[in-house]
Image (tube, rainbow, N blue to C red; front, side, top):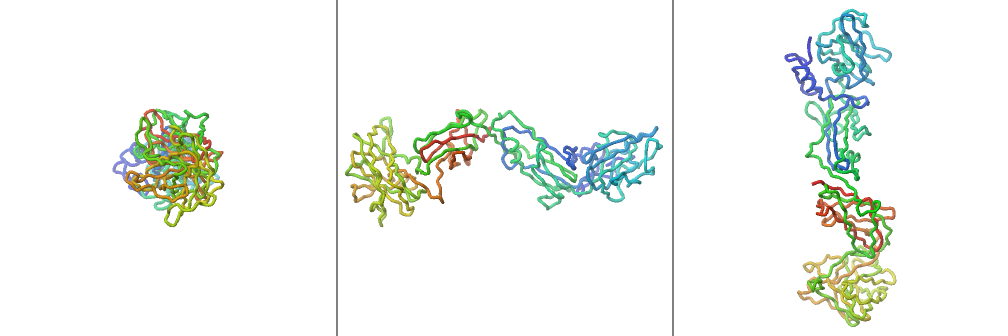
Length: 587
């Protein structure tokens, strides 16, 4: 009797189109060749191969997570991989015989059958299905009757392990009568079929879910993304990061909780199949965690009495070491006005007696006024008010603002129509520092970005001080800072003295108004303390909108196990944060 792959023999089995691999013994054949053909795992009319992947339940798989699919025409496939196997005993008194039926469940092209070991089984005959029964005589057969039963005497089977057909046949079933005894499990692994068709209609599923990847049609090189691979196969790389994260990403889970994911690659037309996972070094895994401490039912309301910033500590689990991003929902019902800038600009200070004191101040009274130039790059198209940082002396004061046009020289000119604010009476501020005071106009004043106005600060009673800020290196670009002119309330105006000690000193202000429809200004800004970028600009609604804070570089968690979210509002009002999630690293 002959065995497949016998040393020195002419027979060998391998992937069609690739090099044949001579096999010295049956076990070598099984390990080296049939490693391509894993047992059928999904009843879908095709052979399958599977991989198991275990990941934390709170994992977020970042792209790319590339699995490699390899496929090609197989020379041999175990019959149990491509169909249902049924056996019946047709033994004679002195001879063990078995009739094996392989039900493919669909039309398959078959060109040969084989047995793993011709010393154990010999083929008597092979019949194809006609739709009503098995055709007689068989497509191949030894010198045997067409119908073999238990009353048929001893028979001699074909001596060879490989039994080629005279030509390819297309059939839904095969009946293979054998000399030898075996059950369904044994024969499903020991009897082989040769399916010459190219594998087709591949798909990949995870945990028996819907397909996460499909490849309709035949797997042919240079078609539909298939590329040549070793051994006469073709391959594709598939990024499964999104599909895997969709089955994971549980922010309520702890790091110790895991999920087993079973990835199954199947083909309607079977063949050589392989599914390779990326190595650990090529995987990028993050973890999502929910921030609940400091939030009531997952929400926290921030009350902004005026524009400004509120820090929010975000406690993280002890295994979180760095933060990649923070996701949350933001809801609010804020007015349409915006205050720019919402923070600062800061006054230039020097050390004082326990408290920093202003480096330079404008000292204004009914005889001494100041005029500050507005920034030309504002996003506002109309101005409804101006806010100024004022310190009020003993006895209080009354102050108003008058908007001035630019003259041809770029200096303060004549008053703008409607540019006089309501006068504001102020109490002594004492040592509280800057008091940002709002000066409102009777109606909004249109702004021309090409010729921004000046704000003349006029004191009608008492005295006030306005601390100056400094622009680095005497340049521009600090929002809310403007060159300053001095003079009597009716003018003329003179620029701040050009002395070295006052180089870069600027007046400070905040503009209140509305932005244009073509260039809206988000009223809420969110950032992580210590990050240089990644700020989220948010236009919240009462129902809430999603926001993501994503710095370009991950942020280290502080020693107390937190990161700080800095919430800035450009207007007074209540802002609610909900469902705060942090994407973190464990190292």
